[in-house]
Length: 483
Image (tube, rainbow, N blue to C red):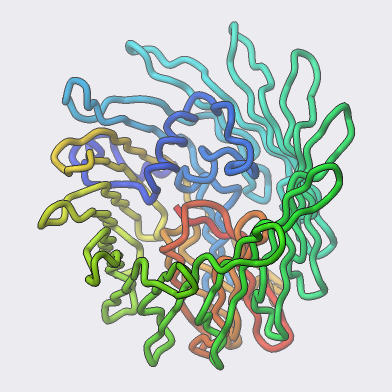
């Protein structure tokens, strides 16, 4: 068994931080022992502690060009918190143990334990099931109460023949039985584009619509419009409409948001995108519609290094006829294009001050070995929160035979921090990324046309996404993890 990092290393590497936002981070820490109530819609798919924990995905299948696959099997994962009250540094907090995998390296279960006064005690447990296609079919969250494991919350998932998730049921344990609370229903077109997403609530075993989202696409499968409706008494009412425009390179150029005022659509905001000659995004201008005119609101500019890594994201706001600094993302990459440092700063007075900082360390296979994070107050002079995580795992080398089109594509590193390399035996022409609910969050229809290409998703939140790559008449789909 390979121990990738020692306890002493963690104590010496306080600067190793995690790739999460403050919101996701706080949720993950609070769910080290339990999942809080009230996280229905935003965290409906799977609890945040699974989404944001590095390498907590069901499997790592990153196949190299020699048709072999490295699989990372987590043995245990430890979390420390930064002691802001006593200012004593890192304090042991919790750990995941008893992590069980099936033969396809899907993670079936794990147990969370809390550390208190030198004693480890059981806190929560996660149990998952998968079908023959390695799609997760159920997720059960249990708490350790009165020296016994008790059900708390759960999900059930159903997929179509193409592997699209067509239903997602959330349920809660009520004494001795499961009670259905809400569900999502999804429909897809022949190109596996999601066409409708419906949220339904449950009352006395009867399902009723809460809201729906309809999606339309152009001939290149680019998202053209998103229509949001809310439902009351079986009647859908318009709420919001988003329409997108693309250039000849299929890069989005304008995205307009309109709100329904009861009788017609009213302009709200629009985003205007610009690109360099290599089709990299260099700016996004957001304007608000005020008194019949589009008025500048904020501007994000992107800077890249020589390897096309996005190293800076500067956000400015328009105030009294001038652009004022607002926030700044700084990133540092290693030679494998892993993000080792991500510093988020805010403009305070006449200088940049730290808001949060995240770092990660990786081994020779680009597996995450340790992460930690620190957060500052609004003025950047006091650390208000922090955590640190360390993984102990085995690296398993699996030989792959008779590989079909899907198996001949390599996506690495996965999990990753937002930058993924796609390698295939033929040129990948189109890449689409969807979030776990099926919404398109990234598209690129003008790749390098070579056997290896790279996509930058570092602006997306941590979580699980679905990558769809197309080359000629072949299409490949794979789950990827952004940490």
